[in-house]
Image (cartoon, rainbow, N blue to C red; front, side, top):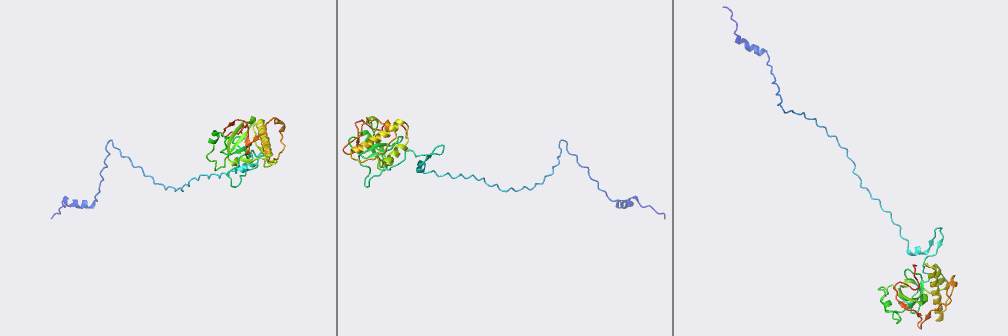
Amino acid sequence: MADTAPPADAAAPDAAAAAPATKTKAPAKAPAKGKSKKAAAPKEAKQPTRSRPPREPKKKPEPEAAAAPEPVAAKRTARTTRNGAVKPPRNPIIAPIKIPKGRKGLPQGTIVWAKMPGFPWYPGAVFAENDGTIPTKVKSQKPDNAAKDKVHLIRFTGEKNRVTWGWIPAGQLQTFNESADADAKILKNQRYKSAKERREVRIAHRKALEALEKDGVKVTKAPTDDEDDDKEDEEPMDTAEDGAAKTNGDATAMEQDPPAASSDA
């Protein structure tokens, strides 16, 4: 019996089993026209930040302590010139006034050195407020703090017997003719704006001494350096029975201007 060849179909499975099956990749799809896909940029890694120390607040410079002001009394004790020479103080208090115990002020008729703002020390007489010779206008100018400051009403007699008035606190009064040396210092050390004013003050000082002598009061005199300038025909100051200085001139009420003085102290 002749051999018969196997059918072709029977060998096919063996061939298929022998050849391994290969998979083919499908072609990538082409991107659509008009649309291009941008490649994503790689993200940069965040670098660690350095921690800064906190800033200290700026300190404001502390103001320098202001120097304590010198007391007024110290400023008046001495003055120096450009070359260092010491000058005497201007308008010093040489002989402070002393009010008797138990009294509110000086008795009428007391002659004192009185100082008004803007003028030198000038001799004047204390007047009581109830004196009938005081002009009404002068009485109306009495300051409100008269009792507190122990204000006195002073009458001045100036050039040509011109009379003026002023309300002056006790702190601006000095004892007249406490001694010849005290009067000499007041006349010499205070400030005058002109030779005329200086002469007028000295004439008033001489008249006041003459008035005291006429009342029987012992006075002390010191020679002055300008006696030659004084007029010999100057009339001495008269005094009333109560001791108050009295002149024949017209009384002029002045709130802050003493007589015969027209300059700054």
